[in-house]
Image 1 (cartoon, rainbow, N blue to C red):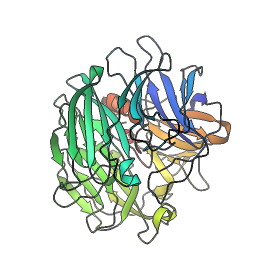
Image 2: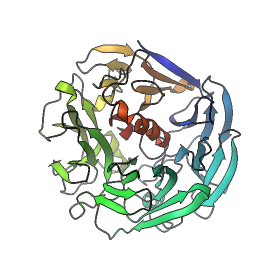
Image 3: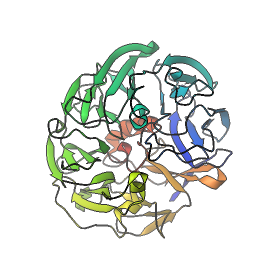
Length: 456
């Protein structure tokens, strides 16, 4: 039965919320961290930036719904994804996930670089246990270039590595840290260098199965161990940036592919499928500003279908996000263009394998059926009120789940199937659960995200 599996009361209405799981140590149930504000997400792009009407709060809630602590980050921390990324990650190996976030410490200077830090919080107490200066390399860039920050993490032969990133569209900087915040490596990718820029999604997994995770910094694949580049898709022909990157395994061949949708308005192909060495398998079309997409197992024998959404090219500034989209559908492995196989437009749904059988169901995010959970044939399986926050292996249970926000009530619910099984993709359970720790950074929980499809 598809039902509410968890319910959290944040204690106040919200217009934005991100959430990650937090381990409190051996023998203790996992908690959830919510970072929320009753103001829309603020973007550093000058054409989209507005003034906030509320401050960001961090609220840690135990598995039984008890509020463990709450912290108001104040007017100095701009309530926007790119200004204030966060993750939960056990860097010191004690079994407790520290909370890491980018903090602005000057109470009256929200744009200051001099007072910006990487901050660590002990989830057991809610107290700060460390601060480190945030790199200032982008201080002289435009606002949209300067204030795009990322946090990620991975493992190198079992050793945890924390990764900090600055920049998306031009010069880009990354740093890897070992336990004790010892600098392990650092990297600059100059705007003048060939190859793609960063993406709005950041995925981390061991694509070449050598015991070392790779971070996909856009279509550039870097070693978590030392930062060196393994692969770079379309290095000499594409220099813009991707919106989404989604790995999936073809059930017929067992091969791993990476599906990407690109932003920008030049003539380079806007949708590309790569193999596991970032060699292009197919490309299409040659124009558009792809701002979303997904891959869903809805074909015969769980064959994947891919969707890409292009925003209008004639829209101006921030209005581009309210323009009428153009949608494309493909056989995900061959790139063959197909008609929409669903009963609803692809922009109105997000795939989620809620029963774990390896076929995608969908949560409807728009229109008259908003709130429905439907199967691939369009039949309604359940209905829940709320705005979709994220999907994936939110709970350590079979199948996938959807997290919804009931904004005016300040409540968050997680819906899932209490009869779900872990089917064909159970071997990716660890990856899917790990990616949930990075849902507070970038657009990992927006549009589509990497936890949604690499195994169910």
